Length: 270
Image (tube, rainbow, N blue to C red):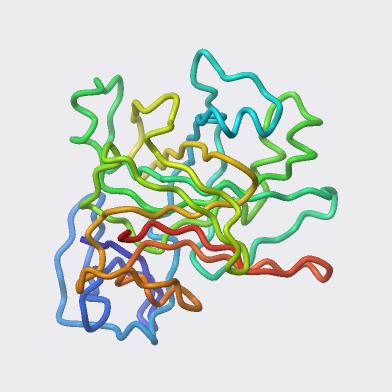
């Protein structure tokens, strides 16, 4: 199932992607929900981040290639950092370039949506607390990250965590998802989740998101088998991510006067 969150004239609701549009649900998939008779056409849907997390917990330098490209050592233990909830935006929302940075980069991520309150989860039990997976973009002010001892400023600005648009509940990241990034249709990164250094997950809070790193250069896109395309074919991202019925994609427009462009992070059928 592809779970989305949309804004309608009645307010903000969760929904499920269907061939003809988004079926609106009452309630929340994190607690209890049920379908309604309302279906919103894709072209009329105002997509938001598919969940608003309490925080985003991330694993830094989780790929050998990413550590090498930044001139850093491969960590012996997971490097954990947190992005605040205020950094989260939905598909198509603008990423604001902070005035005190001259080097903002994008990192595509596989985001894990934790669907229940949990703690000290064993690796073999982790699927029981995962609601699903979505695409994320760990936008980073690289010059500020390198200047500071901790990463809160460089990775925590408002709009620095585009997510969505859909949570895919039928995805197995252990299959080895190919990771790729495109900026203005140009491939900037390519890798695989099978290249992760640390693959285990530990959950604590409902609605929390966990994201891992990516390999090679600055901006990335995720793609691989997740059974999203109804007709079995790969479909390119279309403007404003209305193609999410065919894939998961996080699409951000960057417009800072002197820096403009479209950055797409996606997970799609290969």
